[in-house]
Length: 186
Image (tube, rainbow, N blue to C red; front, side, top):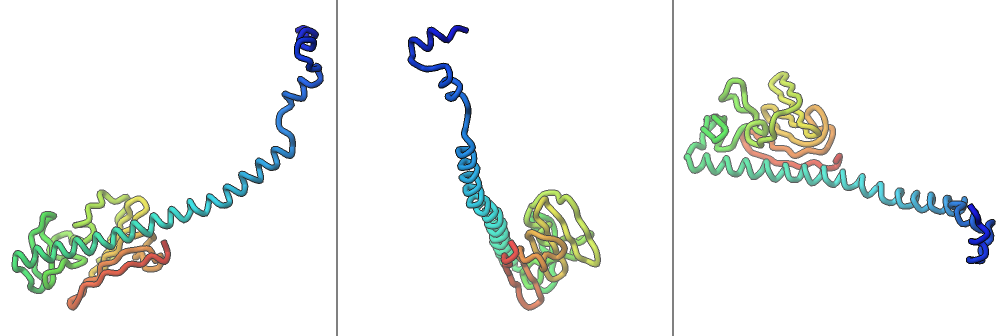
């Protein structure tokens, strides 16, 4: 290629052409890397917090769902005037055991026994279910459900969820119904 015509018409020297196409300098690359490092150092914690916040919000929603479901089932028992001890009430989800008009955490009115969250929360098919000594643990992707004769818990963690501190709970006794929310571990 003949660069002499280019040199005459533009006033550029051939040596300057190679400097124009030489790429980034070392200083430019270092500054770019530093800026990307600062951006990632500030952005990554925000994304991690978003995941934790999402877990907390999910558990809070489960807490509200537990309370609403129990409230609706108690209203059904009141409407049907079936408020006795250890009675079986026909629900849209099948027969279930109630005590003083509130659903038990574990219904022994059916064989096999039914569990509160399993029966009324419509979580779908669990990936894994373990039933031992009357306790039921089921996993649904990241969500774990633990139920026994006293507690129904749903949240993030393993086993009975009490050591993971990220769950909503329905506790039913012969005297009261309690709802609690634990999110310190979310």
